Length: 340
Image (cartoon, rainbow, N blue to C red):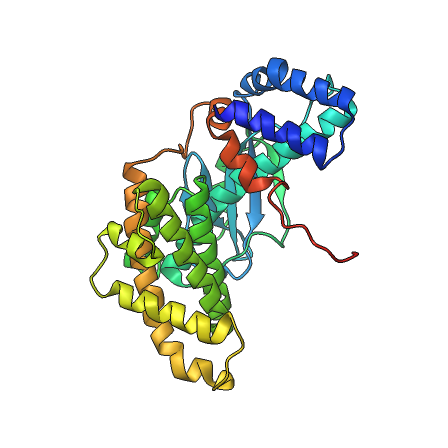
């Protein structure tokens, strides 16, 4: 069903938005029906590694190697995050040029989504544990086939050994890595908003961070509605299904009040003094949100519908093609009216 819906909506977008000629629409349909999934299946034996330096990471002392991702310090004392992804986007030379461009763009964004998801598992865990928002977007990228890459080289002596400052924090970090699954778009959006709120909060953009933390709560409510079948009208009532502490809703209501009075709309009073008035309270609210995220991620890890380490990436994409399509493609972007 996911494959059929993906084909229908991808073709619809190509026809109506991309204005692909009708003759090539037929070619696109034929490729998706006859070659697309078979070609992806033939690539299941190939994987890429993507390595990216993390900004704002010099004070974080962690190192971890797993089948899907890794993090380690380099000789300059900055962290490198690595992610294993499928090898999809190159080599479609047997396809018509315009159709090939569309397919390769989609597969590029699909690979990118997987790489970002696995990197966000790591940077999200850092934000949750160390309250530091490390960013993988702006300091370069290395990518190659895993078969051409030496993983042993990452462990050799030229990399600076880590000095463990807190075994308790590191144990908590590893626990988060064991339950986070940002390949699930709902988890991805929750952790992204928490990471973004952490970044704003640590940069003293306290008022603006309220919007991100409120968005985090909004996606948590969406998870409870979709995965726990919660139908209450209030999004905060939906969250109660996670068996959270009885007073947690009070803190979330305070967060929404601060959003409505200060960050979503221009405040009518004390706009210069938000941090002095509410900084400590927001610190407590963030801790409550973290506890709720942990309960949610524990639930997801025990009731996983989107595999985080699939045996075959082609099957994974086939089962989740609409989730990936809705997450990475252009069809749901808002139309702007200005002449840009």
